[in-house]
Length: 277
Image (tube, rainbow, N blue to C red):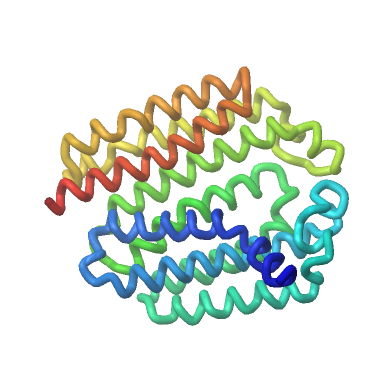
């Protein structure tokens, strides 16, 4: 039972299910839930791939976790490193098999994402800004993956992808500012360490500004109506407030930025729902 529990913990199920929910939102925003089969395949593939990514992340971080997070499954002995690696491979395999049932563009996105998940911890995590950008892409691409899985109108999905990716990059930079002392002690070279805290926060603000600028695009294209703009207002306010707070309190700032991304997803759901109705 301890091994089973450890395997489940490796997946970080809450995180994996949340990623699956983002994929479903992407499918819904594209207007492609009339046939639930492709959306279902995409959601479960996302959950499995995210779980596999989390498991392989723990495999690569096992030595650091032995010091900083000894309660994790590998350091506490619930799962061996080899078992974690094998478990990750199995999850990735099933994710790939489900994805092969989807359109070619969805398969291409999945392949890129799987490679990025594997490469993140070992290659890109310690590079200033690169790791932030990769996390932003992976978060935003869950919407894009869901939309391409079902077809439909991909224009609003692409905007949601850009918005979510930009906001996530900003949040990841602010998180690095929050964790700067610990990262410095670990020998990591995050963006705040490389260019300074204030410069990093200004960089985050630029990404937020870009997210705000692109957010009205579905309305401007005529895809969504006035209701979408009203639903979008909390997102804009949250992004502005989160950015402002980040300069004084990074912990609060990054929390606001995270909440704003979910508020954006809600706005897109409302925009599509009104069109359907």
